[in-house]
Length: 301
Image (cartoon, rainbow, N blue to C red; front, side, top):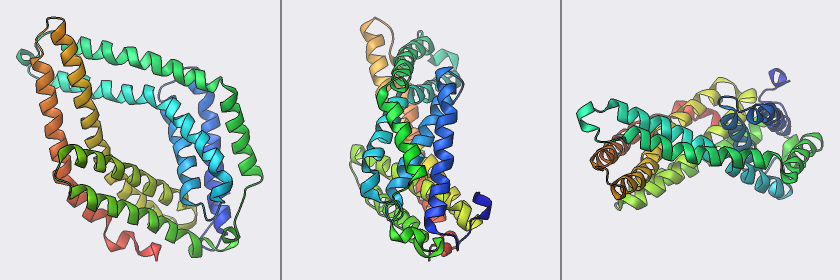
């Protein structure tokens, strides 16, 4: 019962409650994925990533060495689920970009070609996700999750109060993000900066998950901190989406050109995505500064 948890609760009880809730979320998503329900693959992937991230970040509470095999399997499952959702998000984004253009700048069957290219990949990715759920490996992963919840490999720190153990682990996740952002914005080569910002996005997600994992113990301070991490994650995620979309548009544009179509609109869309990335980079310092404000960090000690 998460309502009974607080700063004085054992650190292990707080983390186990969070792990249990996302084990349950993963199981709830399983039949929905098989029925191709809207957003089901995304929900299962999020639960999988939260489980893995929590085991990684709070490895001094739930023994990190003992959970290493399970974390590897959760990473495998998240990878098997990723393709369909990534293509779905990209398709929605690029269709919207085409629809926003003045009609006289859309030369040729641009929307149709983009849709066909990405929907073909979506069908393959969905088949891959369903195949993963039918594997023995997946069933063994579920068994390992149940074993973790029923008989967790807790460390001595797990018995100590949450307020003594957990804030420093969340703070460590923030420090990593802050360091990666500092390194990323200092890079002058665009491709290197893009790659570094992508790594920072993953760290923002980890910091967000770390805070969300302890909301049951710390309440509003943890929730507010998580919101600031979410704002950073979403901005950096939009930037990374623009990078991936540019690569995809280039490939589709070359394909169209090779088949005798005018590739002008694909170049225009690439330019639009470049402008989006520049806007995100311009906005980053303000969002970062907001996330770093002391009032969001006091509970971290």
